[in-house]
Length: 92
Image (cartoon, rainbow, N blue to C red; front, top):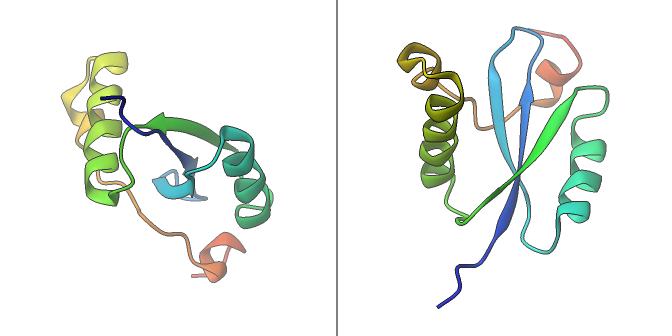
């Protein structure tokens, strides 16, 4: 059985916190377009993960960070799962 793939948006807000947002279940390009619309002005990456579940996606992303950085502290930092309009525009 082949696992279905989903694309997630990973960005950093103005405070340096990592934000994880569901991008698309159709294609990477669809997710990238959604990121451009939602995160106007913020840099983001599109990550392919085998789940649509937000909690599972967070866990997988943290595991990937541990493999890449070899830093338990960095890997276990909390992820934000939403970025509100006010925060996106720089308001508190």
